[in-house]
Image 1 (spheres, rainbow, N blue to C red):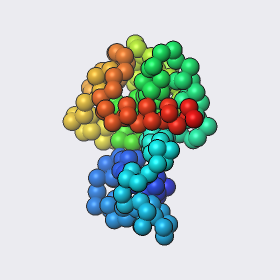
Image 2: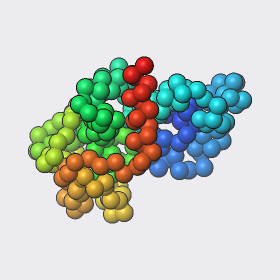
Image 3: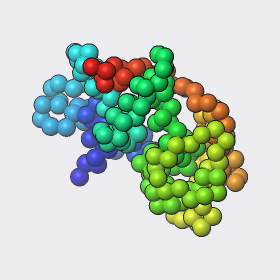
Image 4: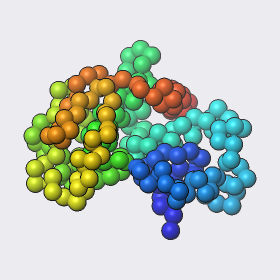
Length: 211
């Protein structure tokens, strides 16, 4: 049976790597079926954004980012509305900041797991400490100076068995610092956009909800 994450990638005709390293393998569904689910998808979605109206492109960008961060529509819209209240023309960056500062995303960015969905499970199952206090709310917002660590009782869990190997070859974004030996992370600076295409998506999303 096809995984729901695979269907999300097929809906927007783009790899979102929602299943981590598994998405690089030969079994990736999008590689075999590069069109949207359903009989009509094969005829209509091979062109990606080509042929879409402005509204269609904005909708696609919204769906892409919503799927990336694993949010429901109501959750995602609330973040957009909050970002739109930012003074000036920095709404899109504020939205990115709100999403990236979620603890489930930071766990993913630190390399503690290879997908946001699994990082969300790590948090919700109580395996993570923020400033030495347990936090099990994936939407918890981090700020500069916060320390992220694995609960000592959880370090022997199967979910962390290959973490040392993974962290050896991993480097987090510049706004995070990672102590690979202690398996601790720190928010050390203001979030920076290291993927220009993401900023384009966020500008499009702000436009979608401003209609």
